[in-house]
Image (cartoon, rainbow, N blue to C red; front, side, top):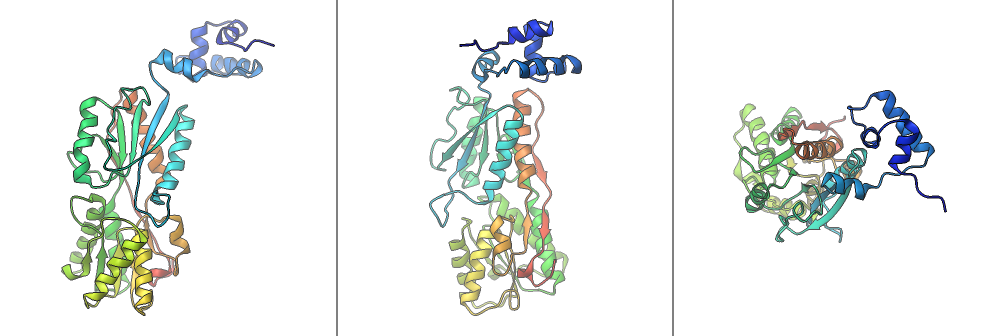
Length: 343
């Protein structure tokens, strides 16, 4: 059986040192472009494959990132918020482009998910998607900081928070949704979503909604706001029924997530109200099922592709000892038929 080619074989054929071969195959700028191309071509000719485990041992790291995906209440057995699925794809592809493997681990918010992944050499750093109650999670995030764990999380960018976050400009998104409904002539706009520090993303969407109303000279009516901590169709249905049972008039509804909005539309339909004829509805997230809702759901888009890229980029920057700041992505209103306006 023919022995496998080694980096020393490539060095011999290329007329360079083995260290230069290693740098060239990593794409190091310390090696000239011509030399990198020559080494890479010889590696292809020799059918050379990089031994990731050996390379990681030499670098004292695992070449693996861990994605902690937190279980969410769902209408099926997946326990995965569909909003995170497209982001998961983006994270996976970005890790592959950077030469990292991705370890996906499902977590429950009640568990000790701040376990020492990095110290146990399971992964070089952590990406957190979802975390449950923000206030409750703070001590766990702070524990990661104290351990020196490299991590980045998707979520609200809050002043003074532990670690690095990438999130959406939820205030801007909430303002855009409410302003659009006001432009359509709606004046009694209800909001479904938890507007407390326990759920800062929903709270920021409510703040944007509130600011748009105030700018239009409309005082927010507490009777038109219903708390919804979880983001599910069932919660949307139940909270919309609660709103209807209050007997207060409303001509529009802004839900803090698409799943809540879809459940709310079913409750409105069961109550004999037409969407958008009687009530305009807007959601938030632009999950795939939003465009297939009946009617198709007007919503606020969060760029999950760019979000996944930024999460990996900022985590890798930390691993390289480079500055990595929290960042917010802009939100974008996507107009469909549920609000009563054509795109």
